[in-house]
Image (cartoon, rainbow, N blue to C red):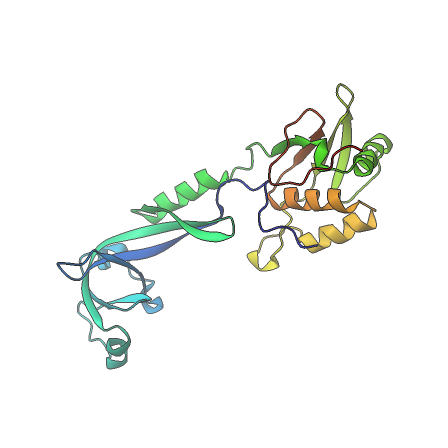
Length: 238
């Protein structure tokens, strides 16, 4: 199973994180630049960085005030400048690319922004209603039978809505992550995929469930009256 890089169920930024960077002024005719601190200086407080002289290269900056700079550092950090501001840079993944979100004046402000953007309380809406046209007719029939029989499954269960023949799925243990290195106690997409196949879930439905689970969806409703998602293929009725 190789889900598309463009997951229509994903909204906003993913994998938000922050990093302390310094704004460096270094020439009258040049705009300021931004660099990470050298790892050896991570323990320096913000007050020990602001308005201090530094040397820097394309990757990091080294504070030089009151410090003798070793020659090997001078060789790899050839430019001189002054730290004009300490910032906490928030970035996130959007459509698979890491993008800059905001610059904040403190670590606490960066953490608060990440909490607001990531809905860290877990109480936000994680429901989707999509057209049954995104499933072949035989796969939607599978879903209906699954709901009627109340068949047990490790990662999802179904329920029917008699008013318009819609079928809903409740997903468990989401998000189903593709990269185990991202950490947490979540299930991997490979583990979920293996269980869904063991439960004889047909391929198109399986792919949609994996995409929804990756986006931390909990309720996915297939409704004949719902609008289709442009990113997903449609299966016209024969």
